[in-house]
Length: 446
Image (cartoon, rainbow, N blue to C red; front, side):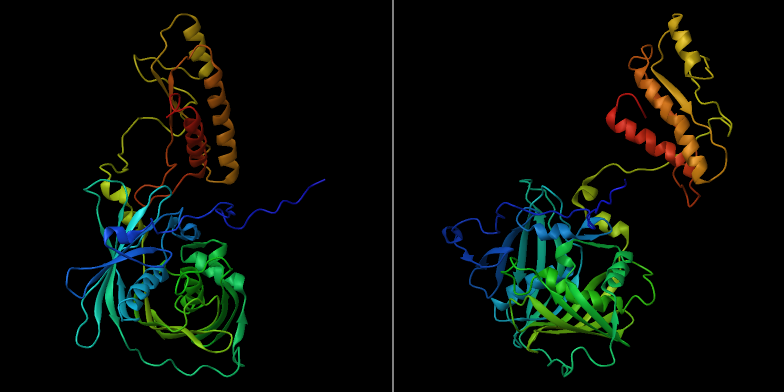
């Protein structure tokens, strides 16, 4: 009988059984640095005799595996809460514990196998106690020309306005419960793919322009003032306020104002998010006893396009190549035969005819062009039928004793949408089939 198989809900779900290396690299005092106890920051140094500081550390999927659980548009991106936490950590150590403002300039992307050097610069204290702060990174690849990227700039301060009064009843009487699954479904529409650590919302309620939530962080993730995953979970219910009935665009935090951390090390939060504009909200979070933990006076979100994420990739900036389509006229019609050969005026109606010619002594061609005809109907049945015709051709091509290392070039028409045109699902099925064969036999198919 049939057996039900439970598949993991998250594509990258995994459990680690080995020790995780930290950001520190030994006795930094030997290099004239001051050690910093922080999961991402290892050391700090004062700049000459000036009241300016530089904090350094390292980030990779190996030393901070939680970053693999935060994907935006299919790319591992350090959440904005991670940048805020870095700025707050630097501020606490320089006498400016409040983040007056932080504006995102470029997403901090993470790739497997690549370690990035982190650098947080803190400027001299002004008369009012404020300091400039900036967050940078660069790949640890030993290349002098490796580009340093500024991810965020802002201002640290010493004071912030008090948080509004917290409701006496929890959750408030007029707040309606909202399914947590619906919350994460809406976040998926925004382009976010979260791992288990970022599924921290246990319950959520909504009352007009406010949401209330209970969020938690599993044990074993201590060391941060506030863990970026817990902080991000606290924001998730609030961001839903800014999406209306559906996600019209992929949203990403753009600027933060008035961020204050009152109680470091919390692992459970009660969160209130209040919509303050079409693209902005306020957040306040307390512990289970009602003591303030973290507050954000204003968070502004903006749409983010796939091109911006792609442009932030190091390999995209360095690549000299790009993919484009050039239209050519081949003269073939919709009813083209399954197999044709172009070259020396020879044309064969099918693979059998080509093999007979080779058996009779015809020279083996370097390449053969094949065109798979479709019925012209853009239906699933047409896609199945067309793929079923292409599969034996691919299999026989590999098994033929006459074709040797001859290359089969399979042509499609409309398999990929170009210039806003429609995509032919039947031709797309052939495209996918032959691309799969090409990965296994790269010298036999194109």
